[in-house]
Length: 70
Length: 273
Image (cartoon, rainbow over the protein chains, first blue to last red):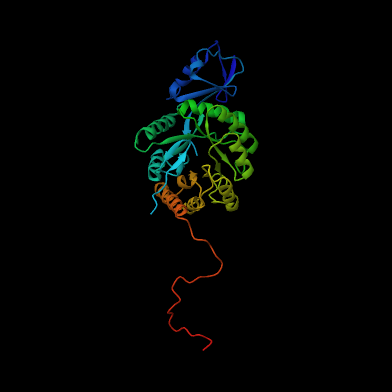
């Protein structure tokens, strides 16, 4: 299964839900789940729905965090 | 003498009329010191992709938490923006993400229509504002000084407007004072915050003397040689401008009028004698 995560193509070998994917991605960062928010295919996904949201082929997932801004 | 009035915005009373951005500073420490010097109660922030590593994000996150918690007497607020969005759909989604992340329904709504001027797209802006208001957001729309656009934003439920002084980051000051004065006259009862384009404290003072309720800026402080000193300079200018507005300025006139009494002027000769 091929998805796009934060603008980069990612190959997933096994099906997963959004929570599993995010935990995997967050292990590469200093952030925790409460420090990020997520949109899939330009739709906001509330954190309560991460576990029930199954990632599908072609999904475009954005995981965002707080940054400086004007 | 009048006491400095409070700003009532989004059902919130603020002592400070200086909203400040958190971007472009030389270091997080200088950013924090500048915000303290500005005595701002509202700071703007944004959202971007969480990258691998990303330790800077955690430093910033901790700052935001302390910013809101440290001063309980003088409540401080985070104003997330939708910078970089070009459509109403993008801006609405990012606003929802900001609400969840920052735990606030305040949103500085930016929908850019032109990448050279960073001018807002008025049509997408109004569409996004309408939807966000219906979802319970307190929308702070970054808009131009176009009167009709501003009235449309009010008609869809915005209770605050943030017209530009000049394009973001240009430092040109108030490039169309006539349009801004007209806005202030035609929309006297809605909080108007001049957002973007100011380069020096005199620009901010000018906006406040014109009767605008507050000023939002970032680059002029962050890119100053001494950001902390410049933050204080803007704070003082904004306070001075507001005080001058409330004091009521004199009416300009073309003819000179001596301020020293004429009666008893020495060496005066009546030509009729």
